[in-house]
Amino acid sequence: MNEIQWPELIIFALLFLVVTVLGFVASRWKAGETLDHLDEWGLGGRKFGSWITWFLIGGDLYTAYTFVAVPALMFSAGAMGFFALPYTILVYPLVFLPLLRLWSVSRARGYVTPADFVKGRYGSKVLATLVAITGIVATMPYIALQLVGLEAVLRTMGFNEAGFLGHLPLLIAFIILAVYTYQSGLRAPALIAFVKDILIYVVILVAVIYLPLKLGGWSEIFGAADAKFDATPSPNDGILLNSNNQLQYATLALGSALALFLYPHSVTGVLASRGRNVIKRNMSALPAYSLLLGLLALLGYVAISAGTKALTNNATGKPDTNTVIPVLFEQQFPAWFAGIAFAAIGIGALVPAAIMSIAAANLWTRNMYKEFIKPDATPVQEAKQAKLASLIVKFGAVAFILFIDPQFSIDLQLIGGVMILQTLPAVVIALYTRWLHIWGLVAGWIVGMGWGMLLLYNIPNPATGKAHFGGSALTLDKLNLFGWQPFPGSQVQIYVGIVALVANLVVALVVTAIVRRFKVSNGTDDTDDADYHVDEGDKDLRPVAAPH
Image 1 (cartoon, one colour):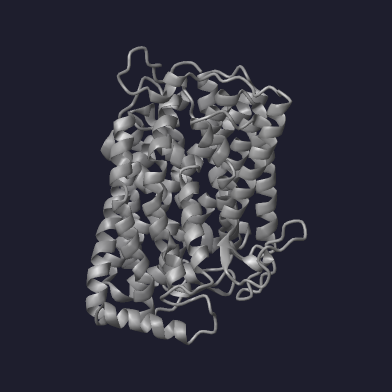
Image 2 (image 1 turned 90 degrees about the vertical axis):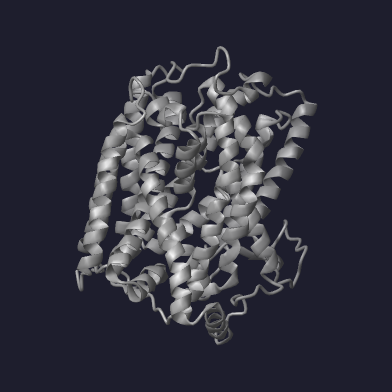
């Protein structure tokens, strides 16, 4: 360890201690009769109100990686990094009605995961298992990315050694997180999210007011960014989009918006809500985070104007672009405020990492363990299995960082976004209709997943020297349909996830039409029309923590 920044580290440690205490106290906060049930441990008793849900979902979606990666992308590529803003604006109106229906049917039937709903809607183990596996695989690298954000902060504070010693503070932080999440379940990140979001709001608002004043105003900042991008050879960066990457920008924003609430951790935050009105208020209020995100993204240009340089990761010998914003804070703010900023980002890693691990553990327990290993598992056994699974998931994510180049985790998360989109027909469309057949959905998933992975595999990144999995932007001239190229010579780019999803839907429709013609059984629907409209306080509503 070299050049430890003690004032920053002490403030970081003190705030981390506060959230650790909160994490353990959370087991008694809004507690039910027992935590030995997935409704209580994994969904917080399904009774979070508007404020708690707002902080929980906000803390879940706006992660530590978001707070370092979005401005880092603006720093490196310019306007393309701003896609995160329109996508978070698009997402809430898109998911408003589907989430209400998903909450209602899950509350009525005791579903804990999206795969539970698919199993109940179609009676298909195969389809539910595909949804569960997709959710788990897509979530794992997402958790690892929270560690990337946390490590960027630790590296800036001086923990930048190669080997195990450089990772030791991260490992300690996640052991503590694992212990209080094991004890308190979803209540821990829900309570900690209050601290995280307040710190983030304070830091970002101070940064976007103080730093432009210090650096000569926004005109100087944009001028410096424009000059930097004009001096680089890449045609795809700049403070404005060009004709080739506008479609990529739009489809990436749309695809990200469609994917966001398909992730298991997003669904977990919604299902923990008390009722439909809570979800309505949150879908109306959560865009406030988009304002915060837009301001945050502009810090990438502020870093250019300030002449900020990324730290070199001593473990890899390469510059770590994710350290740009922490280094900016360290250089431009007093040490005490930089410590607060680092704590905000660090705690911002713990909240989503905890929710994601709980969501993955719920999927494993309910849709793998109970389905195939121990069908007669009691609620107590389910809760114990979920707690153990959440530990394994967390330390599996730590293993990504310890033994694999963190850049590989970023690539895996990129793949995860394309993957989770392939569950949209089975989850979202099924909330409204069962017209799509089980085998149409399975075939669509296989084609969308397979083609999406193949397209991603064949995308190079000349800047990093990677021949495969070099990004999510597919040039249209590389689009090949059984030897037919519909856009020969076109350099216009498009997001792979949308291409794969379209293929998924087309195949699902075609196969559905075929199997329906042959009158193949479409499974059994355990849900009723009324289930999609139940709300808190309804007569005969299923009790929380009832046997499943």
